[in-house]
Length: 169
Image 1 (cartoon, rainbow, N blue to C red):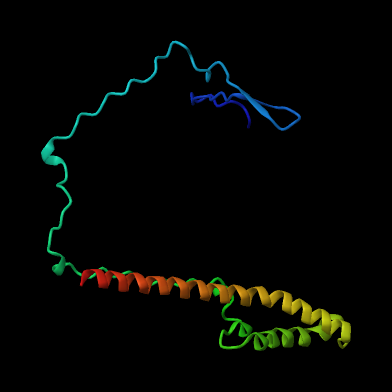
Image 2: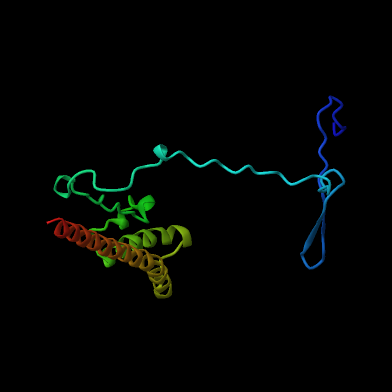
């Protein structure tokens, strides 16, 4: 199966790669891949200049400024970093942070007796609450920062639009 192909297909010889103990490597080209000194460098022919009539005309106003259509900036497309999990009941943005945490805590408290086989004690409750807080706080902070960033971007966009409108009049 691993015999060389006798069908006349080309056989490629790859250079040898040697690795040293410190992680460096050296590539030694084989006789077939080594560059030869007799091969002249490729010659590049210079391009001919374009005729004058094919060059674009000087930029200038094609229409008076009063006839130009207003340049509208497209609205900023908001990206939701948590779109993949937005259908979860605790990801409802109308809920406050405590309401969202309550959904997560309710789920964990219902599952605790099934998993542990007993009711949670005070230490278990503290661990569940801490785990929920550690999970939900970064999510809420990132949502708030994303909203703030898009509000700032929208404010700058509105300022640019107003500035363009003022310069046209």
